Length: 622
Image 1 (cartoon, rainbow, N blue to C red):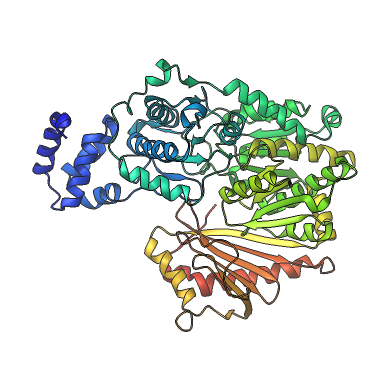
Image 2: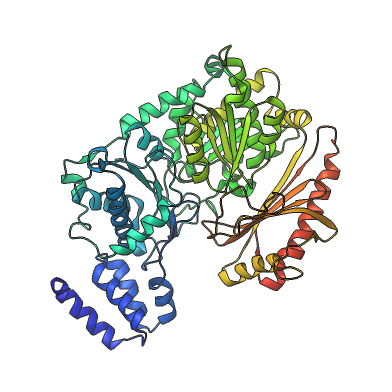
C-alpha cells in the first residue's frame, strides 16, 4: 500500500477523525476512498462518514453485488453493492481473471461490450462511461474489445458474441428498471446469458482482485488502443439480414394499408425498429415524438416498463388514434422486450399480456414453419420453450401438433443455454418466451429480443388483416382450438428481505414442520413444487426436475380445479410475484366462469399465503 500513501494518509486522517467504531466498516470505508477515482461517488461516502450515517455506510459498503436473473443490477451511486465506476471495474477484473482461466485463446477472440442510454449526474455514472471503463480493464490486459460506438439494443450483444466468435460479452443496462438503476449483463461464448457455475466462479474471481489494477481507470485506452474495434455497422447489417429469415410475407407487407405506432420508451429502440420494419418491407412505424429519443430520466412515464399496460402507453395510444393506426408496438428502454396494443371494434384498446402474445407468436411461428418446411421435415425435430412461470399454452399446442415443448427456470438465461444445446444437437427451435413480455422469434439471438418481436407481430397483423381478422380475433381462435388458457400475473413490493424469507418458510412449515399446505381456502392442492429446496410432490422420488435454485424463492401449487399458481421473488427488483393460470379443455368455453374461479383462487392465495396486511406488503399500483 506504500504507493498509495498520499491518498491513504488523507483517508486515514478522515477515518480517525470520523471513526465508525466498527473495524470492518472502517476498513471498507478506507478501501473505497483509496480505490475510487470518481469524485462524485467518493464525495458521497465522505459525506456519509462526516455525518455519522453509519447504517447507510454499512448498507453500501459491507454488501457486494450478486448475479440475479439478469446479471448484476442495482441502484447507481457509491458503494460496493451499487453500480458505479469502481464496482464495474472490479467486476470486469474478475471477469478477465475467470475468462483467462477458461480460454487459452481469449486474447485472440476478444470481448463484446454494448450499452444503453442510462445515466445519473449525481454520481457521474452513465452506461457509456461504464462501458468505456469495462473496455479499459480488458484493453490494458491485451484483450481485443468490440465496443459499440453508440447505444444498441441488448440483443445486439449476444448476437455479436456469436457472429464475431468472441469469448464473452457485457451489456451495460438495467432494462426496464426505474431510472436510478443500472446493470451489468454477462453473455458467454455461446451467446446466452451466464448461468451457474460461471456466475459463482466470476464472483469468486471478483473477490480476489477488488483493488483496481494500474490501468483499469484509463478510459482513454478506448481511443488510443489498436485493440479497440467498433462492430456497429457489421453487426447491424448482419442482424437485419438474418431477420429476413423469419419474414414470410414481404410482398404483403409492402402493400398493407395497416399503420403501426412504435414507442421506444426513451430508450435505444427507435432507429433499430425502423430498420427492422424496412427489412420486412414495411413503411416505417410512426414514432411517438416525446419518447423517440433517449432520455435517462424517462420523463414522460412514471415507470419505463411497457409491461405495466395502458397507463404507461398513454402517449402512443393517443397518437395511434390521431394517426388511424390500429396496432401499437412498445419496446422497453433496452429493446429486449415488447408490449403490443390493438384497437378493437368497440373503440377500446386491448393491451395483450405476455402470455397472450406468446399464444399468437407460437401459433404464427409454427404455422409459418408448416407452410415453408421441406417435405421431409420432421415435426418431432421442432421445439418451443418457455419459463416455468409462463403460460402452458405452447405445451398444449405442442401436444396437439406433435412438436416438443420444454420449460425452464425463470429468466431467459436458462432458455438461451438450452436453445443452444438443442440447436447443436440438430433440433429446430422456432420460438421461446417468458411471460414478462420477453420473446425469442427464430434463433439468431439466444435471448429475448423486442426488435424482432415487433416486426414479426406487425407481419402477423398485416397477414390477418388480409383475412379481415385482427390479433384479438386470432387469439380467440387459438383458444377455441386448444382450450382457454387464462392467466393473471401481478406482484407486491417488499423492501424487507427477512419478511420475504418468513413468508416462504411459513409455506414450507404450514401445519407442522416440513409440511406444505394441503389447501388454500376452499381450493384443494394436488401437488407442490419448491424449486428453492428441490422438492416436487408430483415426482416419484419427490425431487424437482428443474434445477434447484437456492438463491431465490419459488413455490408452485397445482390445484384440483386445473389451476397452477406460483409464488416467487424477483431476481431484479424488491418484488414478490404471483402467477396463476387456468388451463381448460377446448369444450369448456365458459370464460366468465373460468375467470371468476381463477380470481377467487388468486384472492385466496393472497389472503392465506401472502397475508399482505400482516406482512406490510405494498400492493402493485398503476
